[in-house]
Every structure is written in C-alpha cells, then in structure tokens.
Image (tube, rainbow, N blue to C red; front, side, top):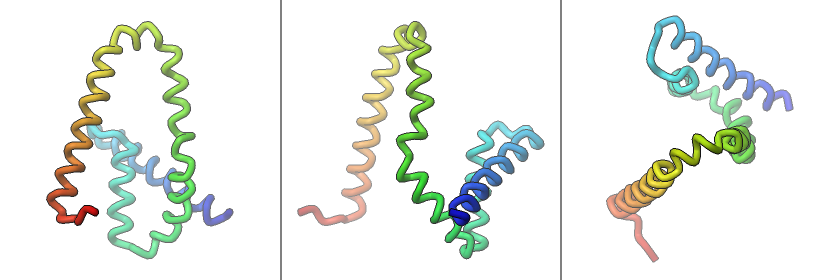
Length: 116
C-alpha cells in the first residue's frame, strides 16, 4: 500500500512540476504533458525508478474506465451545445476511428507479422 501511495505521489509531483514549468516559462503546452515528458526523461536517465512507477501504473490502467466518468457525466449538462455540434462530432469520431484502423493495418503489414 505504501509503494502504491509513493508511486501516485511521484506521478502527481511530475504533473505539478510540468504545470509549474509551463507557467514559469509561458510555454503553450499542457502542463500534464510536459510533466510526463519530464518523467520519461527521468526514467531514461535513472531506470531504477521504474519499479515505483510499475506499481501505480498497473492499478491506474486496471481502473482506467473510472477516469472517464467525469467527462461522460459532463456531457449531460451540455445538451444544447452537443446537439448543435452533433454532426461534426459523429464525422470526427467515424473518421478518426477509420484512420486509426487504417494506420494500424498499415503498421501490421509493414512490420512483417505473419497472419494465421
């Protein structure tokens, strides 16, 4: 349990560090993204820190669907705005899904993975 709490605290520290750097340097980049980039650089420099990250990342991935709850609940309060933009949302969802599938098919074909 302590290892899990330390891992979560570490992730929060890197996110906060990213937010701080973005605000201090006025960079046009999300602070959480910069924090994850800083975490990646830290893990590349010091691979021994991977253990504490592994403990928390497994738990977060297992419960990933819970992280989308607030966003999906917020949609219910935007009914008029969503209805006005619904056709564009549907086109973007279908188009991005199709592009992602096509890209993955291209990657699989280019990687030489044998199909059964």
